[in-house]
Amino acid sequence: MAKKILVVGGGGREHAIIKALKKSPDCGEIWCAPGNGGISYDAKCKNIKSTDVDTMVGFAVEEKFDYVVVAQDDPLALGMVDALAAVGIPAFGPDKAAARIEASKVFSKDLMKKYGIPTAKYETFDDPAKVMEYIKAEGKYPVVIKADGLALGKGVLICENEQQAAEGVKEIMLDKKFGASGNHVVVEEFLTGPEVSVLSFTDGKVVKPMVSSMDHKRANDHDTGLNTGGMGTIAPNPYYTPEVAAECMEKIFLPTIKAMNAEGCPFKGCLYFGLMLTPDGPKVIEYNCRFGDPETQVVLPLLEGDLLHIMQACTGGTLENEEVKFSDGAAACVILASGGYPVAYEKGKPITGLVDGQLPDEENVTVYHSGTAITEDGTLVTAGGRVLGVTATGPRLTNALSHAYEAAEKISFEKLHKRSDIGLRALKALAEKE
Image (cartoon, rainbow, N blue to C red; front, side, top):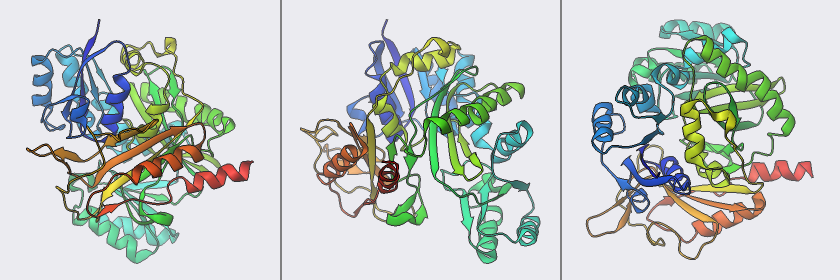
């Protein structure tokens, strides 16, 4: 019987999840809360803040949803999955205890240390003076300073010298740029090597990794400018070879799931592994307790299985019986952002080139809406820092990238900003392999 589904969140990731869920024959009516303008072409939207757990759960009960996908980190950390379970509604995502793997960097680093999961050398602090004492004593730069709690993906600072480190500590711990998330910090060694993002499905027993991807975090070309939530991504990641994948499964993926079980907080849902392939082997840079954004916008278009069935198997503990298969092709996503992102940017700029939120007459191209709204007169306008993600799929990465960029050229709004070099590093790596 068709399931009535609610997806919690309102960005490009949620849009990609909704589009993938709609391919399932068991997907019935689908809602998104809060959603956004562009998502409203694909799902009914209800304007409830994703962090308002009580109102969201009340809405889920009132509307009699059969299944809820909690896609965002904040509501997961606040225990939305627990609150839904308490009223008998099954949900995709970890409970509050398991969501700490992302919500507290101190928790995740201590977990890795305790269970021998490879990661950067680190120390944790709650006293700003002690942080600087440690950094000066170590005398190694660059050094990485991370806010303990959630910070919209912007709580990681790479400091090149003592002055930058002191400014970073002040920003996070004294000025409280990220609020209580900066009460504790993790200081860790700077790792080098290619970065790989691997999203995985898990039911707390088995891990089924998705196709690997490569994010592009910096705002501008050549990896310059400020860190953002991500300006584009490609899949698969050429550095993530079958040999690396096998090593990650043995030393990182399964040990993490076992560690969470041993700590009494089994993880069910999507576990994201942010990895660095260092000269000493793969190491964990970070865990996320949910689908990445914009990684989801390249990973799910390549999924050949039934996303709804896979998600329900994660919730129900039957993932072992579920096939998780991806196509052999490639996908590329180019983010169209508001000029000034990630600092100050204007909203409400009319977007041209789209019909019902998509590019007409474009095969193998999907536009995912990160920050859009529809005005009273029906105009689609910008409503966020990251506005749209243009994803193209193709047999090879070169096809997917050129198609994504060609498609992106057909969309315009005032002060549109995009990187022109998404995927170039991956193409170089592929060329070196051949």
